[in-house]
Amino acid sequence: QVQLVESGGGLVQAGGSLRLPCVASGRTFSSVAMGWFRQAPGKERGLVNAITGRGIVPYYTASVAGRFTISRDNAKNTVYLQMNSLKLEDTAVYYCAARSTTNWALRGSEYDYWGQGTQVTVSS
Image (tube, rainbow, N blue to C red; front, side):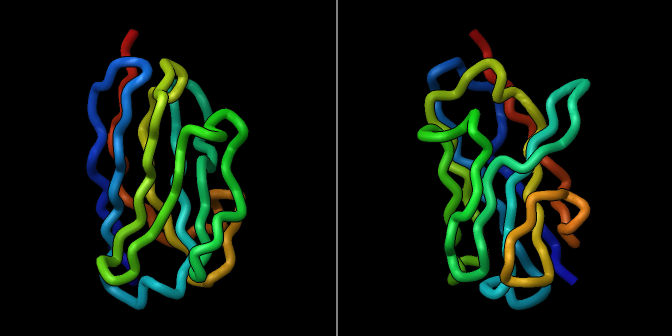
């Protein structure tokens, strides 16, 4: 069993930055793939960034290229989403998710554990 707790969300002006940490507990964290998803009002939840158990970043959604960075600190059981140059369209609830394997996946249905989500609101 894995418990995930996100934090770091809030209200930020367009062009600003936020860093979202997700702290994991309950099992060996360093071996599992992690992902950050987001869901905006009226839209489906989608994968933003993923990182494998080995720290490889195989995926980011095109709209965040050059602006968002996923990383992990296995010593702290934490995965981060650094978000720079935020845009209005980045407004969403952001979720941290974990798989039970070291390999990443695109679909949310292939993630086994989820955090409660943290709201990010970007204002003009």
